[in-house]
Length: 442
Image (cartoon, rainbow, N blue to C red):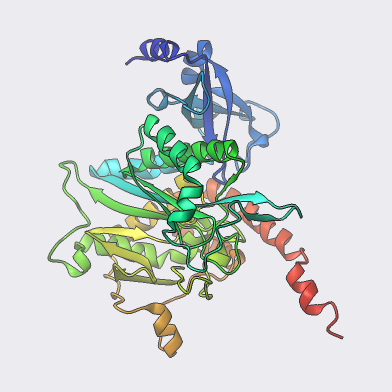
């Protein structure tokens, strides 16, 4: 359909407004409502936003580049089942008539352009894990379902039954939005769920994840709960990852990473891509695990359930969930990203690191064929460890000039500035743990 046909089709669906959305540097969906009559202008020129009001744009307070213009992508238009009369649209960020280098969707577009030059396509399966929370009577955050209290709650059917209203509304709305759902389950922490859907081309996969978050936020609110992407809200339980399943194909659709006869089922190119990820893992942590809380998830600590899947060490293993990178069925599962990351930026940085491994023909990583947690308990030699906190991660990204240049210095500069400010703010806090431990020490 051309734009006029799309507008008439939307009007026939009862749509009167378009929710023009973009993603700020923190990964949060943002936007505004535009009347359907203004769609053509929103596509050609863009919906206007005050640039400095958006986290991470780096735009000035005045002048021709002070406006963030979100140009609606017509192919993304679709009615929102949870907002009657409103259609969702994805925007690309522009300023001064040019693509905005600090816009995370544009950052991913630049990496994908490098792939197109080679005739390649990146396919991504994103696995959203999340918590359903509420504020208790004391004002503290707690699990929304008071009866969700098992020590090992994975796949608990009683909890699914109690929260079936939320899950079924998610099923209905996601199906209406074109998601091909695969499964829903209760995860390994109380209040934690995972909803899986079919993989897609990288840009579409990131767009789809943002639409997933919008849907989950709305549905959770309708059920009196809060959809939370906080990586680790519960101290003694596993956190929420956002694992990326990655594969490359050439112009003929041939899988480039897979080789049934290769080590771990990977081709030489697949091993090079993996080597690039592991070599840049510390710097990638700042993009894929972007908050102070992210490093509570990335810790080799005990879990109330007796199981932890935290990917603490930079290693590659065959179907080995104790490794940062898992090979499975001829593809790579990148386990570093968490639920708080900006999916566009995390995919862009991941792709940049993988391409660096290919371009430099890095040697294949040594496969890990044991449980790294058991290896640690034995006191054996361990693979390199990921940064222990956000400060270490930002230092690693600042020091990794090739990755910064590949992703984009302007974007990385904004990210590092905000993360350093967050580290400083966190360091200035005094926690309940500190008061209980030190207040009467003597």
